[in-house]
View 1 (cartoon, rainbow, N blue to C red):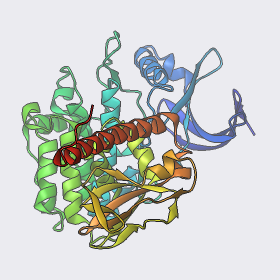
View 2: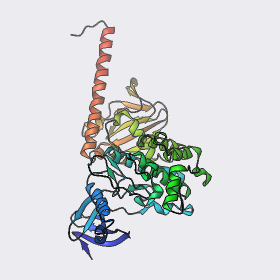
View 3: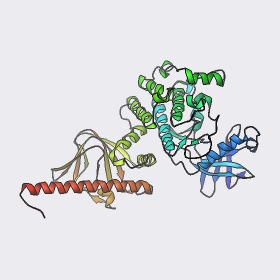
Length: 431
């Protein structure tokens, strides 16, 4: 078995004009990795070598800097006399290119789910000052039914760097009008490119095409494509509208942020989703993002919460917690209202975003419930077991502790107010 550095090569995954990618094993970390090896002749090319070197250095510089569930992690980079290569996360799957032909299109619901995850990952990258600049199906990996990873940040523009951006990078069919004009770029160029990917996944066609790059660039700048529904009847008007806005040529009329784009995708997915066989990940994420309890959590931490939590639906008058029972779960109310009672006396009414049962975690042991909690209508709750949260990352647990502390302070303040009111009604002074 051949080796590259310390890595043991298993097989070749793919080859391009400037590099080859292998699946390999990292014997020290005991994990599979993907290694992109750049051909020495590409870096030494008199005309293009400088550009290839810049692309390699750009991707290598991101090692350890982008940590997101839907971005391929870069572990290591080596550039010496023997070889130039980048070691990254191995993804057991295929690229979205497979699903860009009309004969092999994915379900609309799944396409919206995939685009949503891409949007959240690219929003995270943009917040780190990184614009991808080469979003296309070949750079989006699909593993399982809907788990995606964005790869190949070689063309990325790092806004915090002082280096000059490389011009002429990216794939013409997916470029924004400002990119083909070589104007300054913002995250909206990636929004446009992801809009092109969404259009192609929905229809099996590119929105802009030509016999050569010049005619394609003309279309990108001047021609509005027909709506996806013209090629696929089941595409609803709501999704047509999303694609149209993402592909708007004027930056002012395009989505101004990934947050706007993501919100519309979630709304569309809600319409597309069949009655509650399960809650889509995109809808879960959007729900968490809106809840006051999670306002200090980053996107990455919210994805971690999604992996830890169990989402449940309950009907009116259903008992979630019974006074006197022993349990280790705590709950965050995602939708609806619940009432808290003790010995059949009403103590409180909780609304979406509030937490209950948290003493099961704060008590560090099996906790005997001191009150009952009942649904006042149809509700959705997020259940997390104390022992499961103990396995979360330190920063995730830190944010939970902060949220719990705020909750306890608020409830103590409310209890003091009620006590003062009660004493005042009885004409009792407190000093």
